[in-house]
Length: 468
Image (cartoon, rainbow, N blue to C red):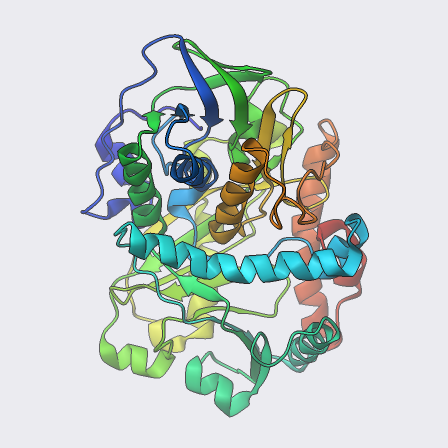
């Protein structure tokens, strides 16, 4: 969804990823008027396109229509950090409490997420989507005694859930620095369950793939309202037995949905391609994705063309759940992200930063991603990924396939299926609460630096942010 941009040139300048020369951003034709379909999907990002892909593969006779306000991959799907990971925004402990299956349900969802990382790679290979997929895993470094304590506790918690060394292990200082020589590294956690990829190449390749399978994609077609049996757009109405909402950070633009999902911005920078001698000092030889154990989230990857892409939170939530192109750039936050990266890797002090961008991700009120289909209305949905959507959207697409086809499968029994998050508070409470949460994570990092102990602020906030 989002704010209308009409030329291919505008779209190609949205992020580093959008500049991929092998991907066209010429908008497809808008909806020509009223039409009938079996399934209407609102949103041309990963959620919508994965859903269309798996439905078209399962039943080629289905009439599937994807409606997108801008172009497929305009939003978070095309401009994220490129982590295809097994991360899920809600903790295993939280999932066990919301699932009728309890602990078993939480374990099943974690295993499904692990398989999803591989599934994305399998489909990209099978459909010849060149998206620079490299499953190097994720390193989360500890750069203080407090962070190292956090890392140890995370591994111990994983063991309590039956997750062995093959899923998460603790690296000592030398082993961690061998993989990633971040300044001051004392240790790290490592999981193999993540792949780095080029998100815009994947989302545009997926759009081309579903078109070949007979799916209709109408871009430059803003959906104004979703109703049982109808997606109402500025160009006409699509009538369908099933209507799926796949709008994530832009959900508030739909009639009656302003408080369903809060858009929170994450900002990213990219360096120029770095020389081999610089990478020898940094590491990431297997294109591992990386972060550290601070509370205000950071994330990075080594791209296939040897750039360093690095992002983080810190940008404010905007009053009224607004999303605007101007919010993609915040020089204060971008400068802080660049400074953080140079602090991690002083060798980058003189490196040139070539790109800075951002985008809105979607946060449900309880920080719990969900997917579902209301059989009484035919309305389906998926979202609330809190920035962990590159893989989770694929799991959502496969789950929606089974729900639409009326099949009872292992996927449809996972604990996030059918979950209903309560609505966000009306303004100004929503603005106050969302920004207080962001501020609290900054203060938690400061608290740990000053006290040398795990943050009490973070502990107090954890239940509100999908934690234990």
